[in-house]
Length: 322
Image 1 (tube, rainbow, N blue to C red):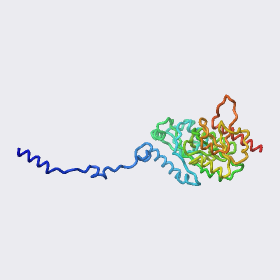
Image 2: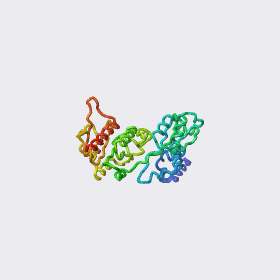
Image 3: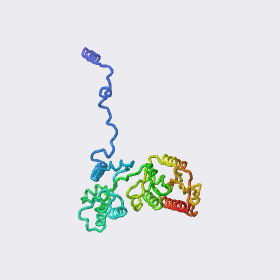
Image 4: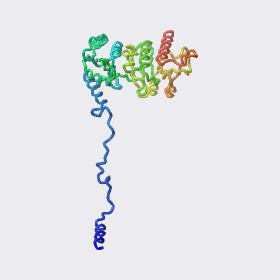
């Protein structure tokens, strides 16, 4: 009985009351480590290795930062790799700018490889012999057939650069609204060069960029026609209007038929919408006129590249007659 009383007394005496939680005592230990780093910044991540290779290639050609920062131009995206003998040869034939041509060991006997090496040498592109493992890593396991071409990011002009050009003829700019296929972009650049346009304007987001596929489709016109990139297409179009341009949208539900375009002799921005959705609402509201191409009833719409070519041809014809 006495022992039980002593144990109860000991429990009463040793009672400490409310205990502070561990969070209050070790708050510093609970501090987070910050946001998750990008894949390019994680050591050992495939994206980090690709970024390191791109930086190394940029340094080998004299540093890409200076080129991207000159004249108000900026680069978009990362280094692109064209893989496969036919693809590489076609890219070199059409003048796609390359950083380096990587050739597998003992590949010189193939005619396509020989011509690729000759074209790269003529264009001043470095030719490197690369083991198969390096080509596998560079192309992310794509079928490269022992041949790969690294293509640097395209140097986009600023929208104001298209206004500052001192070129003959009445100014003509083609703007793209929602064109996501780089081959369509390349075809439009080619048509712009063929019919006297002074440049092409693309949005920075939700738009095709000047990839190797766009370069190839342009058939060399991308080397002559500047492509500008706008952070906000609607604002860029409004700036062009303030500079004295008329903005003409191209849409199947246009208010004016193309042959009746009375603004052809004025400084123009021709805006081409996507084949499926047409012009976006804000861009359409910015246009001074919306023009349609007359077609047979059996044909619902034209490919964006073809529609642009038809429109530019008609504008060139109207200007020549006027």
